[in-house]
Image (tube, rainbow, N blue to C red):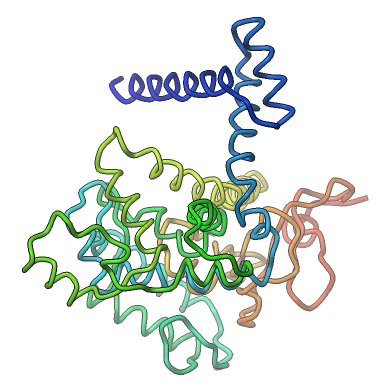
Length: 384
């Protein structure tokens, strides 16, 4: 009940701010001008129109920034994925995590034993039910290419040694560990720095590089609360930070108080929204399998947060189809590339069927032929 009241008060506060901003609006946005005029005349607005106002205020806020140039820009997206992943790894594995050591809501720590045990079990199951081609692949944090089996052995060794770090929230592996490649979130944080004229006047690529570029910590992080000895120790252990580091650190620190956790909730919400589409597709697919007679015992789901089979091999689940355990990656929309398929394990890429398809609800692609009806070929649905 306490959390519900807090949420309602927060919504009222945001609603009040939006209406107040409309009453005082003097900008050139036609939609906001019309809403402001209606508010002054009638004295109120519907929830739908208030939501429209919020979207327009956000659009106006980001308009002079680099945000529009970041969206749908594949070369820039690839760069942000690369630099965002480095930022995430540095925050959880290097001395930078010391700046997050006093947090309680989200900690940088090792996951609980239950998480470790689940990953050990899933990796062993995956290894047992695939046929390794002995082909070499590049895996994250490995100096040299290795086979699928060798990578699994490497991960199992790290799990036994408990050599895993990440964002832990409520003693569970947090969805925030997906921040590394969450393009939407990095876009907004980059745009806010650009709004403050902190990224220079160069190209989009130059601004992105400036955002992730490390600078002396005293230029980025406020050290005024520390005495001289403490400052020197911090500067020795963490000599450099980027704006990306600082933004995540500040957001996590502010999340400690319910009065200052707005940006944290927005960041987490952006990651959840991106993740939900994939999760919903996976859940719908599993529900469909069961509806069509596939028992729970023939489905092994790897989609929990931080699951190493999913993260490393892009395998969402394995399903026993025609007597064979088959690795499957589920997409929320049509796709022709799958990291899972690139490993040559006989896996399938599955996605919802287009409406014009006459047979079933799901389509599969195996990388060797055109997409076909999953339901007809594996669930024995009869198509006329």
